Length: 225
Image (cartoon, rainbow, N blue to C red):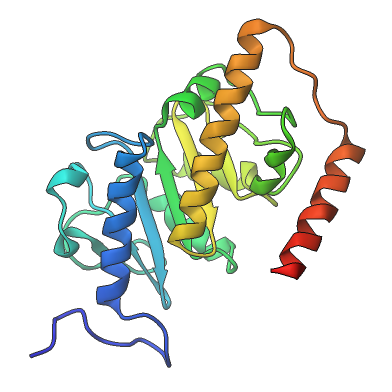
């Protein structure tokens, strides 16, 4: 007997069952790594033309594969319970960025601390390039779960794989869930470095030319891989 979710959507793409397990595992890892706690944050992954997303108001510790919600690209529930209140920016990001396969949202300590200062994270360390540019942008504050937050996030994520949400938290993107989680961990580390540097003085920021050289170096390493 096959599981209800064991159905390939195209060619050799992952089954829905596999994606559900990966999304649940990633949500648990976000908690284990201290990037989220309780019912905070949410995660999604592209599933063909649809999206699998974590449910609203359910602690990860209580979450099962069947609790994950299947929605269409407009946010309509196709299967499951009520999706995360932040479903709008998950849909909007995945619709706008075809190269992105997963979206993670966290209330991690250091990213949220910098977001509460309303600061972009500048090129305080060359690894800032992992997020796609010379900075990690921070949006102005706006209420959660509304279209305005999604619009602000999309702008802050332009040419980027991460942004901070003012007085709120962080969004990290990736080609898949593993990639998005890797970006999230790096951004949290960079925010910690920035916070610690600010506590001592004003950090030295790398120049645009220095960051250009870093990006070229990263491209070389990717070619070798």
